[in-house]
Image (cartoon, rainbow, N blue to C red; front, side, top):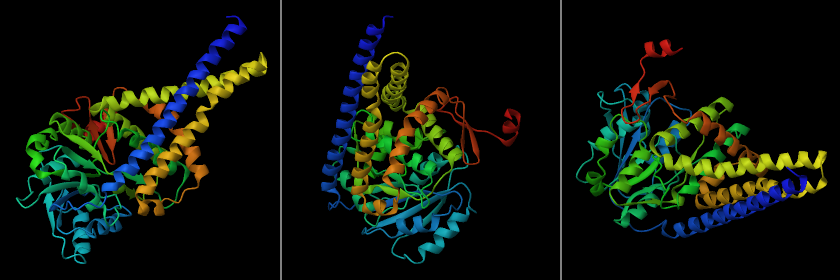
Length: 409
């Protein structure tokens, strides 16, 4: 190919990359506007009697403070249904002890259905059977979130609109020790928030979600959650199938204060992508398209720098245009981060990460995403803590027995 033709081709492609980055940055600014608009209804007067379902398994470092936060909500009438796989679950005892300081919040313990697939979805499915006629709303909460005092009230407000099938909060990883890989996980997790204001891609996040109990029969969660690994993406599909909406509540953003090292970050990211591949492939396709533009632009930008060094300085022009992707990505991540943290002051206070470290981490996310997309094309087995699941049929997941694991090793 003649040198001039190559230069023209790369300049055209790099110009298109600039346009794509401008569109992406504009989407980030619109996201910030949407967050600010959603905050207007954060303190409404819709306060239904609520049952908060919390699946427990083991005692993590921050469990006590997390449970205290859930027990300390400024909300008039709610109770907690704690569900675990075993009656001897040590977290049950810890919750009982903590509940003594909060006598106005009733706490009930439920043992998950032993005939179901062990895991969170089965625990929540069992918990639904223990709702009472007085419960007007059910809330699904993870034990690793540290919600603010008004989290429950804020999460409820969209449910005043009967067309809303689920109101969802989200998590922000705010590790006490912000190591680099902890920050990468935080930035990776934040990318998912891009979907919340997209009617086609919006999803419920199972660690902080609320549903009116009158909608439960049409959602059919007791059936849908049988033998599956994902609770929230299945909930999302149930809401859509019922003709209802997903409503994101930015003010219900909750902190998760745990950190991670590099292997932990990779394992967590790949597990999230595998679950999306199995139960919400549209999210995977959206991510693949978005990050192909970033990665492709950076690779071509570096290639143009090489061409400028060995062939002609003219190639610095397309190189510069391609590499605009880098500051544009950092800027979009900053806009998204600032918008979400402004919506939840308690999370902002917990997130003590220098801007340079967060920006650098945001540049690593697309490469980790690309690797994960390749790794999770056809998930067969998925590890979650000390359990290994056979997910070759995602609608009939099986827990691997220890002898099966030895055979695979």
